[in-house]
Length: 365
Image: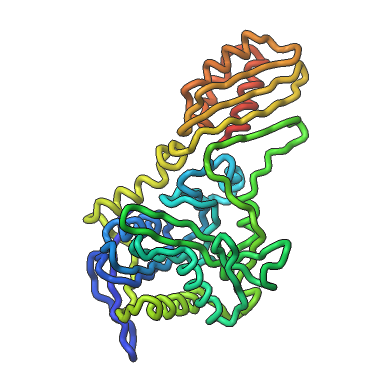
């Protein structure tokens, strides 16, 4: 995938005029006109890396449908991977912490970069809140600095229109988040809801050292003001950002089509969908499951780290060959979790094949 960039000079009257430039980190307000999440996340990281540590920056973008998980999250716990496959929607691991979110063209993303010395999560949250208020929507900030709507601190539940995540390094920090404007909330619910309870599963548990998302009820801004659009939210965010940080320069509109001369962006776009980043960064977790077969009951305890199976303990109450189960468990060690070689399931006895197929289905990616 290659990318190119165009710089827009805004005129007070007349049509917009574009001049072609390579992207530069010298500006303060950027709006991506690309809907490629791999590009937008990489461009955000590139700005964070290259921008002067002492200057404020605002980036706004929106993506084609995708699920974005936090840097330290477990995709098998956070995402309904079968539902993603059916909908042909990718999941992407971002570089910041926080929880899992759904992106589509009805969701607008903002990213506010500041010097670490002046970074305050509550201040940046209130900046976004002012933008929402300017759209004639009553909203407020909860204790996690997320934007909520409806009666102030109603208990329960709080209704969210925005969620946030943060990244802080030596001299720089950013607050980025989502703003639900007209998102497909049904799809959001389908792909973020992991439901593996079936009739034949008697017990399951996935315990992870990663960060778990906080599930919250959400609504779109258009439910509170039908006239709100992506462009209206951009305008509101740009106005409050300029007012807060005294930035007068025009917006830089970025189009992705060719970035072959920028190795960081090219390499970042290639890295995000790869197994090493998407799955190989998964923190250690243990998954305990059981199943009742016609010939006996089997329980499995699978331990994985960085996407690789460290151990698989298989036990049975009665019926199955215990030596067969021990052998199968050893065979799985060192294999990629969720990417078991299905062809080898043809080996061995019928019971072994059934157990292996069960584990493949449970770990399916």
